[in-house]
Length: 108
Image 1 (cartoon, rainbow, N blue to C red):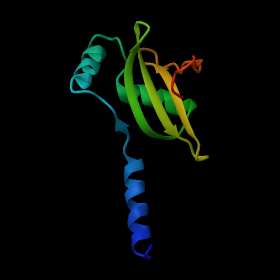
Image 2: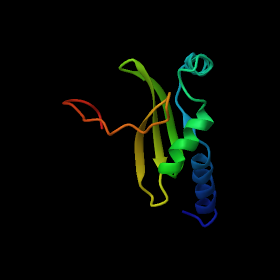
Image 3: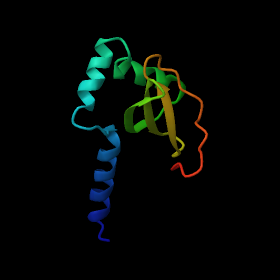
């Protein structure tokens, strides 16, 4: 790899890590807006501020899901130690939920 390619590749990787990625379907953002307006979930900046107090790191991925009758954010963070953490956060309270137990055949 040439000396020029390495800095360009590194700059591209850093740019990708600098912006949080949100996976969403076409209607997901509207569902989230409605849930915020209805008081069912916290606004995203408020929720992330609460999470960052206990779990500092760079947000890599964020998903809002409906699980067992409540809204849950799945937040993937890159910590300062280089480790990736996957947190499940109650979207209404901002509480980090205990790790889920995986059943047979459930993806890691």
